[in-house]
Amino acid sequence: MAGTLFLCPTPIGNLEDISVRILRTLKEVDLVAAEDTRHSRKLFNHFEIHTPMTSYHEHNKIEKAAYLVEQLQAGKQVAFITDAGTPGISDPGEELVRQCYEAGITVSALPGPAACVTALSMSGQATRRFCFEAFLPPDKKERSRILEELKTETRTIVLYEAPHRLGKTLTELLEVLGDRSVTLCKELTKLHENGWKTSLSEAAAYYQETEARGEFVLVIAGIPVSRLEEESRQAWESMEISEHMAYYESQGMPHKEAMKQVAKDRGVSKRDIYQSLL
Image (tube, rainbow, N blue to C red):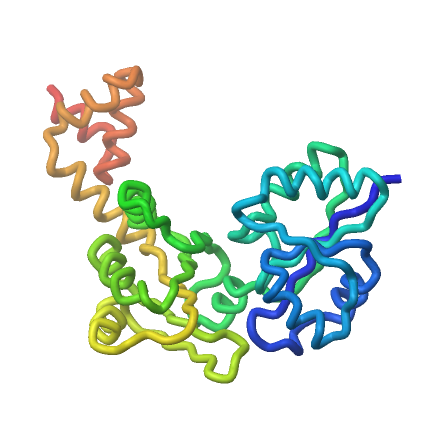
């Protein structure tokens, strides 16, 4: 019988946050795949875990995942841990899980620490709907594309950022998103944990003058739907109604449907559009 892959979250700072179930699992499995075995060795030593470890990281994730699947197919029980937090969230665990499903291997995710959820819960921002972007990509073109997408995001936005890039990222966010409410959460669960609810403009100005220290999670308010609708309406109103109609009809929309959509975009009745086109 094939084994099971156990995704085991590890503390994001405070070692006391590990669960009894996770400790038992790490001690009982045959093998633990770790993102950085040197880093994880500290955790193992602290909790007296003696299970063999093997490295599984971004640079060997394809071939090593295949090896781990072979071990699981041979009946081994395998756990996967990252340096901190929940495996599979913004780390190479995604590839390992994918290969396990393709091979028919059972995957079990144990609940535990996740920096994005921890920050969101303490942020004071809206929490019912949110999107998680992890670290913004370093590639300028891709980064610009994602920031443009976030410009019209109505859900609360959660980002990770390293201290040496924080000032630049805050300035970029301010330029693209406009001034928004933001909560900067740093050093979560650690001795110097701190949450600062402020504005992007104030945070950007502060970190232009102050050296950032610690790992940060940024929780940013989404754009209000009412504001987004108003901006959209103003953009449409800057066009002639005939141009507005032509925009939809060029996409194959029937004339009557185009009139209905134009009326909706402008916040007027379909009859008003009809009269304007006479």
